Amino acid sequence: MAATLVHQHKSISPPAGVEVWDIDPYDEAILTDPIPFFDALRAKGGLVYIPRYEILISGRYEETREIFYDHNRFLSSRGIGMADFKLEQPWRPPSIVLEVDPPEHTHNRRVIMRALSPAVVRKLEQDFIEDAKRLVDEVLAQGDIEAVSDIAEAFPTRVFPRAVGIKEPDARKLVDYGAMVFNAVGPDNDLRRRIMAKAPDIVPWINEQCDRSRLTEDGIGATIYSAADSGEIGEPEAGMLIRSLLSAGVDTTVSGIGSALWCLAQYPQQFQRLKSDPQNLCGPAFEEALRFCTPVQAFFRTAGEATTVAGVEIEEGTKILCVLGAANRDPAKFEDPDNFDILRDTRGHLALGVGVHSCVGQIIARAEGRAILGALGRRVNQIEFAGPPVWRPNNSMRALDSLPLKLS
Ligand code: OVV
Figure 1: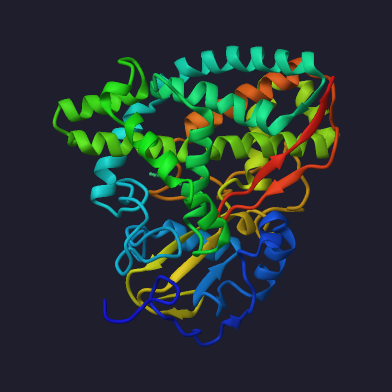
Figure 2: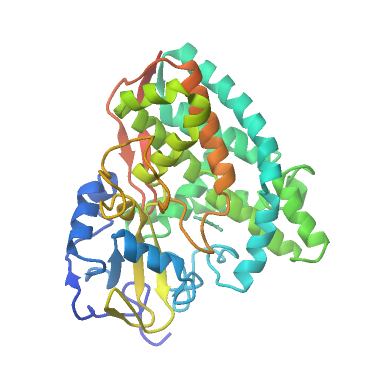
C-alpha cells in the first residue's frame, strides 16, 4: 500500500456544517458510563466529526436509523469497525454474514434464518424455560450471588452452545472470543490489544468447534451443514456461519441478561410489576432492558459513495460510528428515555439493528431473555444490590464486569 493509514481508514476532513468534537469515544471512562456522552453527542447534531479518528459519529435516532437501514449507501463489507477492509487486512477472515453486502449477504443469511426458524426456537424455548427455572433455584439457594458469572454468563453458555450442538463447550473461551470480536470493532487501543493477546489461545479453539465433526447431528449447527449437503453453500461457508453464531450469540445475550438484572435491581417497582404477570411481562421487560442498556452500543458503516445525510455531505470511504445506545435514549423517539419502564412502547428501538443486517439471532436471544426473566419473576420476591455494580469497558459492548446481588 502506498500510504500508511493513520486510523485504519481513508483520511477524512470535517464536512461543512458539522461540529468538530475533540473527544475520544473509546475513553474507558466513557465506555463504562456512556449516558452523559450520549446526551452531549445528540445535542451537537445528527452527525459530529471526531478529529482524533477522522470519523463521523451519529447518536440521534433519525440519522442513526437512516444509516443503518440503507445497506446500499452504507456498506458492511468494508468492516463494521474502524478499519476499512478495503484498505487494511482484517484481524480474521471477514464474517460472511456480518461483514458482507447483498447479494452474498442475502444468500448466506437465508441459511441461518432457516436454522433459527420460529418452529426450531419454539422447541428450544421449552428447554430454556426448564434450564432457567433450575438455574434460578440454584442461585436462590445461595442468597448472595455475583450475577454476572452466576446468571448472565452461566445461562447463555449453558443453553446456547447446546442448541448449536457444540459437543465440548468451554464457557470461558466462548465469552472471551465474544470479547475479542466486540473489542475488535474499536480502534487499535489498549483494550483491543490486551484482548487480542489472548487470540492464540482462543481463535484456534473456536475454529475447531466450527468443524462438522465437533457438532451433534440434531443442533442448529447440523442444520447449517445440511445446506452444504444440498449445495446451497460450501462446506467452508457452513463452518464460517457456525463461527458467526459463536461470535454473535454469547456475549450479546450475556450482556443483555446482565443488564436486565441490573435494571431490575435499580428499579425495584419495575421488578414488582414484572412479578405481577411474569408470563406476559418477561418479553416486554427484556425488550426495555435492550433499549435502556443496548448490549451492542455502536457499529460502524462505511460510505460506499459520496452521499448526504441530514444535509451533511459525506465523502466516499467515510467511516460512520452509529451509536445505537445513544439513539435508544433519544427523547425525540422515546418519551422520558432515561426512565426504565417495562410497560413502555419499545417498538423501533435499535438494539437489534434494523434492515437487512438486523440481528439474525434475535428470536433465540429473546427466547433466552424471556426464559430467565420469567423464571426470576415467578420464583424471586426481591432483587437487591449486595455491592456496587462494576461495568466492564469494551469497544462496542455495554456489559457488566460484576453485579453483586441479593435474591430472596
Ligand atoms: C459481533 C458479531 C455480530 C454479528 C455477527 C458476527 C459478529 C459474525 O461473526 O458474523
